[in-house]
Image 1: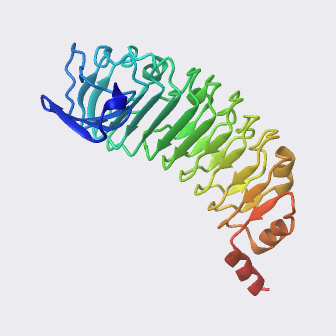
Image 2: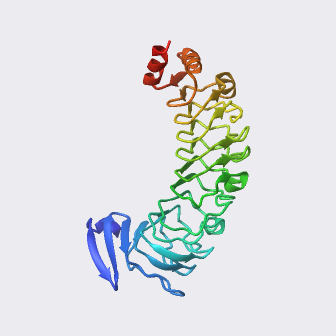
Image 3: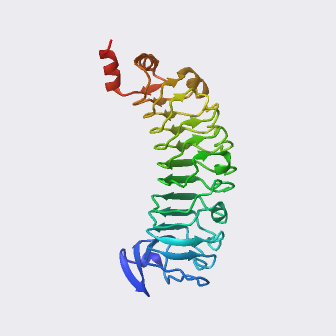
Length: 306
């Protein structure tokens, strides 16, 4: 059916406008959800984008969307999200809340009742009531998480936040004022390969915080770390890239880092607060097996001071 639709076709039903932007994608503007009524778009695709939606999402709201796989909310004001709001959408794999005007607290129960959820993202929302301290706990099919610029994110990431979500492969938590990572925060996430915590306020990382044995890339740039001893890593035999640039680092233990991550290929240390002797010493340990990224201008300034 959707293969016959023309790109950018437009139709109006009531006060809502519907755009078919491409095969298997529809955009719905100004949808008003009513309690105890199922929203009937008359036409929809596997991917639905809501813009300027208002109202409460109840178990009945999207009960007719039995084949939808992706739902995106933007520029909307959602008064409440029932814990089983998406229980009638068994094929839902992707859920995103970004650039909205208002959101209620996003709870673990809402996500847990999305039985086949694979990807969750949210960011840049103007006002949100809260984010659960155990938001991603026991989401057994979840593979990708991305949260950007959300000040309601827990300041300290504990084991509860990702507990038992063993299918996770990629986690990005950016610009969200995180200050600390507990020592067991990423424990038992055996499939996790990519972790990015850039542009936060992290001052503390517990020993062995990164216990995911298949981590390949860790990005910690633009935080407030003053020390990185290598104890934060825990036998990461598959780690290839570690970026701790743009931190006020005054202490780093390269030997301990390479012992914990023996296959490390790229260590990025741009714009730190290490003194000149430490910078020279670390850079001299660069080899064909380990590339150490530093700001060349910083090294030149150090050489000029000799």
